Every structure is written in C-alpha cells, then in structure tokens.
Image (cartoon, rainbow, N blue to C red):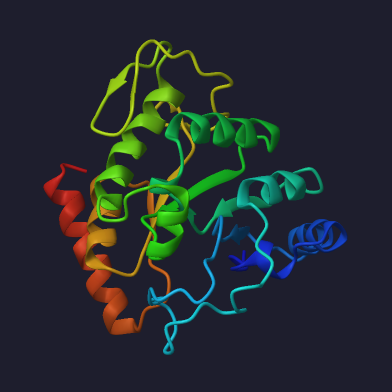
Length: 233
C-alpha cells in the first residue's frame, strides 16, 4: 500500500475534485489522504514557515484551504477503505470538547477510518487572530490530548486542567476504533522538532515528522523512542 497525499484539501478543494481524488486513491491502493489546516492566514505574516527555505507557505497566502475535518467527511462519503487523516490539526487553537465530538463523529461515519494528526502550530499571527496565546501552545496541546481521550473513553468524562475543565460531560458518539480496549481515535503527533518527537513518544499513538533529512529523521526517531521508554511505553 502507498501512503499518503499531503495537502489534499488545499489542492483538491472543489467537490468533484475531492470526491474524485478519494475514489481514485482508493482504486489505486493509496493507504490514506492527509489534510492541512489554517483557519486564517493573516496577510504579510512575519512568522517563519519551518518547512521551506524562504520561510513562506507553499501556495501563497490566498490559496484555498478548506476545513480539514469537513473535507475529510465529504471524502469519507465517497470511499469505503481509504484512511482519512489530518496532517495536521492545530490542536491548541481548537476547543477540545468540540473537537472530541467532531473527531468521534467523523470516525463513526467513516466506519473507523479517521486518524487525528495534531501539531502545536507556528503562525503566531493566526493565534492572535483567534485569541489564543501563542507561547503556551505546547502545554495546551499536551493537556488537550488528555482531555480528548477522556471524552472518548470514559462513560462520564471528568477533567480538570489549566486550560480545559469539565465534569461528567457525556459525549456521544464514541469513536468506532479502539486503542488498548477503549474507544479512541488514533492521535499522531506532527512536527519537525525534538519537542514534537518527545511528545509523540510520551503521549502519541504515532509520529508524523514532516520534512526531514535522513540524519535529522534518525535523530527525531531516537528522541521519540527515548521519550517512550522514559514514559514506560
């Protein structure tokens, strides 16, 4: 099996293109489609995009970028086996209680084909536009992952943290997929830094390292494995 096509929602945003891509990918043995996310891209942003030499996003500031979860739900309706993944959702920008419902619903409607790829984000101007502090995005990400799993796995989810809190918050539907005997959507950690690799080893179900040279990739995988061992995983 071949895996995956990056930036699928940006390149295939129109209805016929999205549905056609999904069907063709499935017919030709592609394992998964992956989507990217930016709610807004402030014009003339100064933050440096970490995956290109010039520090600018591919496609420019005005390129189409449909919501990743809605796009994947549309493609799910046109396919049967293709896995559907975000690469990535900017987790600290999202309300974890709402995202838990959205992700579980997509997993149920796709018959257990959804993978939630998450990252901390890099575009400070976007965080400002959404009213979310940029500097605590790493801590938010860690906490939101725990909150998501609580909402998916527990009958009466209760959670108290620095950024999220709920008590006996009944959340249905539960995901179709199971991890360690409990309903859960797989959470893959995206990122090109050792902090991302360590987060993947410590609390992730997988690691999506983005762009990296063979040497850099080896360093990231080693960091992930050390963090996993240190966490008893």
